[in-house]
Length: 271
Picture 1 (spheres, rainbow, N blue to C red):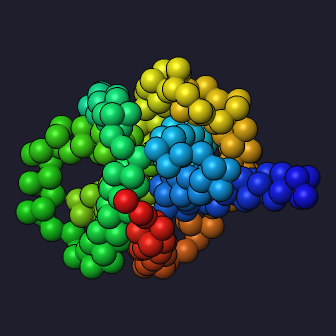
Picture 2 (tube, rainbow, N blue to C red):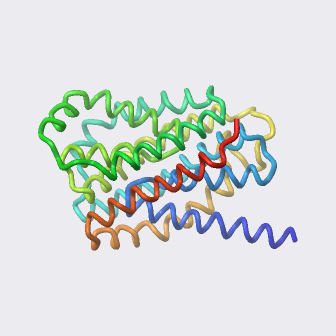
């Protein structure tokens, strides 16, 4: 029975990595929207406390976003769909926001993080489904507060263990980017968020009791390796598929995925 269970867990993690990589390349999400729930439920199944499970899920998710988002950004840049000028303007505040958010997350109860993750995903899905066409007025307003926005993207994304796509893709679309360029740029943002945030979760998690074996701080090494293998396979494939699809299809798929994920986590939440 143990061998069967172990094989099942390995298969689930590899498949999670594959799906995570598809989302990174296809929607610029970084994959955290899938990785966090899977690892959270896996550790709950293995009888770890809810608080440990959520922090381990977020820390490990952020670690997997590093190779996935970098691979995605490189692939999208080959298609000329990464706004490098925007990344040059935002990278410092995104890094600072990521450090702030990751540090703050370690002082927040796991149940609260789970609730925030679910509610945030739900409202972003609803917002994006009904997003209006590009408005010059909206663009000018967002441009005037872009330092605050980039800091907010970094901090909220690292708190929730995601790559920033759930924030940056709708935002960039509102500012007139096509969804393909928004997704490509979001991949670069995900890399900037995940590196410092992962380091914070690694450092602060040291010394915490009852963590899974083979962990570095709040990063579980075995899920990280298996999920990363899956992303390396699927990211280039998903980028090619994405650039051959209608933008409306991509946008609707993005919204439906976020909505289903948020409803599942709200259903599982217990205080």
